[in-house]
Image (cartoon, rainbow, N blue to C red; front, side, top):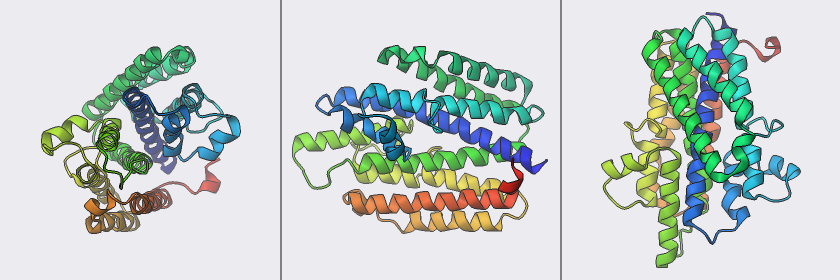
Length: 318
């Protein structure tokens, strides 16, 4: 397989995962704010911008972080490189070179979804209920596409590259969601009403990662910080946990040639997870932020190692 085609397959999968993560996150956050009616617009909606690390970029374009501005910026703003509509433009662009790799029926489903999103995204923002229904449709269709790829595509080199992109993007989003939401949780105030708000925010973290039901089934305790962190970062059977993604990313890389540099970068992250004390970190927002920041920087190193090892140099990718 040509390195350029391999790179397009890898990024196609990353944009799939990024789009699904973002639509779920926005819907979960909207539901959280319904349960926290006293939170003002800025404090309520700005975390969605911070998760993507776009605070400065957003502030340059919008005067306030109200629902309308944040939702438009994240979903329909073509000048925002991380917006949902630009993710689907990127999916279309990467899909062109993957025609011979992706099963025909899935190829057609992807094109149909891209067209639906691009044509209807502006009109879908007319009301919160219409937006949520639109985002749920996108999420379900993305999951159907993922299922089609898993069931109909040979689990060969192309499939491995897709899984690598998926696991890397998923792990990165897991750490970002925990990072931004957890810094808003007071670790000191133990008043009952504050503790209730803390629990609700941890529930929102779980819902943003489609993990709330699985947490309740496997942990069997009320939602709290230490258990949530342990579940989302260390559980090896939860598909969206950080450890699960790292372990499966490592398995994919080992099936390729010259995996040493990538595996070394993954091993550094695995060691950080094993040495962490999540009971302490859950009560220390500053320490937790620093720890998660290290994970995000480490994942950038993994991404860079993959690109350097398997994809064409940047100067040749015009």
